Image 1 (cartoon, rainbow, N blue to C red):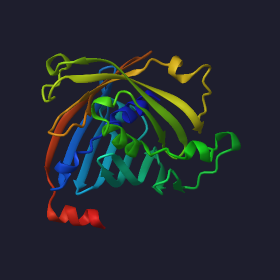
Image 2: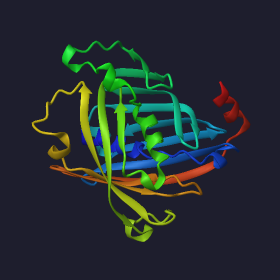
Image 3: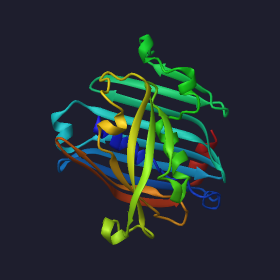
Image 4: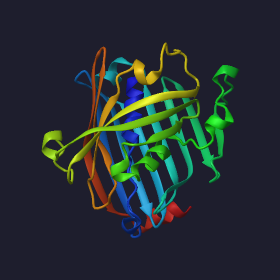
Length: 274
């Protein structure tokens, strides 16, 4: 589903600050709007807390506008938590909670620091043999939000990444490739600090619950998405700020509604320690 891929694309690059910026503790809030053929589709709200070398990031994705009125209910919540060093993120866990219609699903992933993943599914997931994700494919993969945080630390190298992602039922690789750059004025993102990087994003199926078997490699079967990454603060992190994807039924577009940051309150710092 192209909307789902758009959501994954905006998750990539969700920001981690430099260690210096995180020492005092701060909250970053970003809002995104995704439209389809000119109509409102999905809204994504991100709230990220950073304190010392720890992070706790949460997103909420929900339908709005015409898509909400004409299609079944969808709401997703993701969370990722862990720490980071100058060399990159050190994820401890990630979770997702999805409601489609009246059917909820939750999934928890906990990481052992050596590539291992312990999973908890609610309700239990018992796939047929051909949809099981083998342990060797599962190892080293991250939930979509943790994968995005890891990619965001790459800064100017974010568009030269292969990100192993797993949502509990599907294991995919997300491939990013830089195809250009634009000034803030040309991109229509006046808050950007310096030129924006334009990347193409493909997905490659690895294993799991895929019902429509592709006739050829997925990277050739579909046109890639384009996503614009920009610096919005004093860190070297590049945030996803704009997205476009062509489909046979119209264009999917994503844009940043707001970007805010502030110091953490003492209560928020204490909550992160629990």
